[in-house]
Image 1 (cartoon, rainbow, N blue to C red):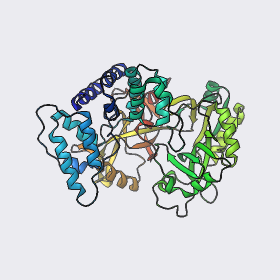
Image 2 (cartoon, rainbow, N blue to C red; image 1 turned 180 degrees about the horizontal axis):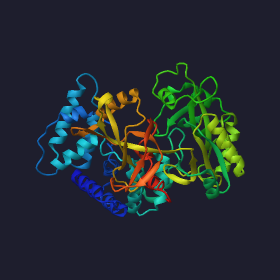
Image 3 (cartoon, helix red, strand yellow; image 1 turned 30 degrees about the horizontal axis):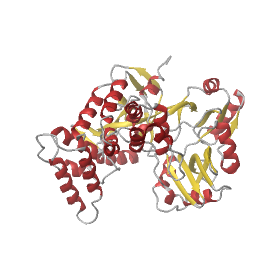
Image 4 (cartoon, rainbow, N blue to C red; image 1 turned 45 degrees about the vertical axis):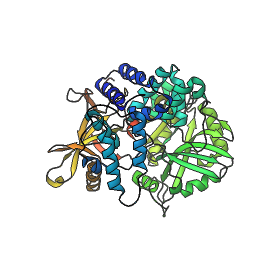
Length: 504
């Protein structure tokens, strides 16, 4: 039987070191001590997530609690798991007061360190998507199975606790039982930035070059008439996009899983602003703004899983099932033809091109080098860490953003700069409200927030700087837009930022 105190101590040990090896060893050590029934909740807790997902508790509720702590650790992982489930089930009239009472009961059994951990857990402050890679390696080490077997199972399940349970309780055979399941989203394959088109072509060899759309990632699952549509973060949006559901039902197949992008177009066929596309995902009806899908990959077709096949064969399947909805692309182009497509994409209002190795499999859930994105300007997807109150015309608004890059070794985001440029009055009002809802603490000038909002930043480059922990600083950074379709695990890493150094 493992106590919450053991999880808290391990979490503190992981936070205290920058060594990926040490983080992995600490987590694996605790995982190896768990009873089977403790694996799922403990894995979630170690990853900084509430077992079972959000529980409907806001920071205002947490901030109002003042509970005398327990003198000694007594809470077990299973007791914490049950208490979180009980809070989640509280609904209806007076639910706020009843949640506060349930939380008071839980916190009253916790030591001071455990209380701080639980408050940050319920508030979302512990949630670190960047820790997933370390967790995968730790699960593999604790279960004594290949890391790649765990990574693949996680890709297919989309759930770290379920993957850990399979590895620790059933070993490699249990991990191998995970299959692509229609209706259960697959973690999407991601791309790495390339400095130049010629560089990407030279690196990858025989490639597909396709438009990089300024749209939102979608994954479409169809089995007969049953259709499910998911975002990049695996959130289901099926009921909000009826035109995409109808389109999927009209494809010439029985079962399919497609990867692609969707966007809204104006009357001339050019893409509407990204925010308008994302606005449809939260809408209750389609109104007059229709979404247009463009697919670039096929992961399953009529009973055949295609994940491990080369991209060229997956594209053959895509051509068979949805030729009229393929993203504009050319296979095995010359450098001149690839450059012409790049210019065509920009002229059509898109972001640039993607360059993909035709012999690559679908490596989901991480940024590999088989897919490279090429854009004419430097941009980074960074994590908002805090914001400073504005002056003059911006008085009363949270303005100057503190920006962090993802730590690939599972630590907290690493600060790389600040900016207040590019913020419209509308964005200033929006982020002032959003940041205060996500506030963790503040001083006279700065509000610190849960590190979960992603902002796309345009910049001239980076420079070496001792001012920030990552040793680099952004040059002439400005806000392009927020990315509600992305989470902290999708942010650019400190390695990607450092790669932009002159000569990097």
